[in-house]
Picture 1 (tube, rainbow, N blue to C red):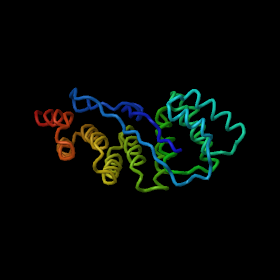
Picture 2: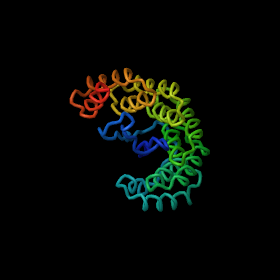
Picture 3: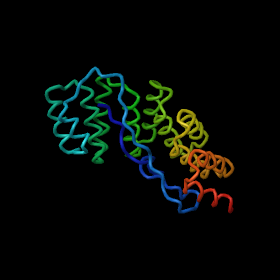
Picture 4: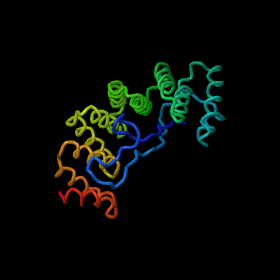
Length: 225
């Protein structure tokens, strides 16, 4: 079982809720999509009971069972990965980081773990570490939508707008139907004062989802200026 880290993006820390109020409207907030992915690298097997606890969102029991399993298999990188994920879900990000780093040191190197670790670094405002980690994920998979998006938002949090724009556009090229990434790019363009580019992205969103109320409200706000 592989786990894509849950969590929303915060503009001030990078991760958490990222509101569209940057365009001076109350259209609402967009949350980061959460997905599961199954990697091809499965040289380790984790404890089924411990994994089942995570599947049913019983994170405290999942932590206990994974810790017991690791006592028996101290070199099982997959178990450390799952344990880090579980700690992240109860907002203990320092332990989350520690166990992801241990999994990587033991040889777990799928692009998803670098995405998860980058997200966790951003939770504790270690933005440079987040940037380096997202880039490591991209070294493994240049077409990782999640790592491009995480890197874009990390750059945006540092006001590195040109670099952020490049990464948002790469993420959109990989997954053009993803609305969240386009809304994040709208927010970036609002920060940059690029209303025409923001307008163009909102119209792309309307093509994908003609009834998207958030896009309609933001277009009205931009055009009313």
